[in-house]
Length: 59
Image (cartoon, rainbow, N blue to C red; front, side):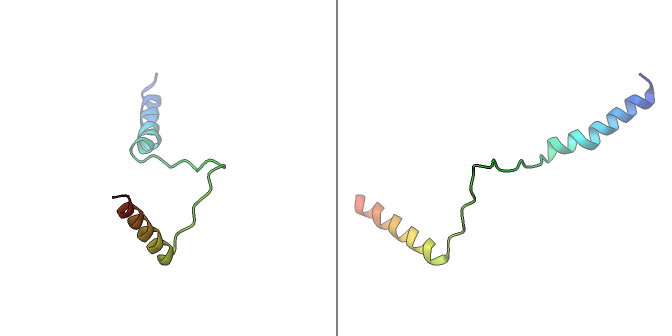
């Protein structure tokens, strides 16, 4: 191969492939996965309260 071709292939490898290896682009979620909604502060408090309550109840 000519030097120009080798240099161009090396440049393309550094430009595209190494960037993707170092910082991979995230893949989109599959279509069957639904995003969970964020819990409100009140719902979060109730969740933590009842989980602690049930763990104490087990002992």
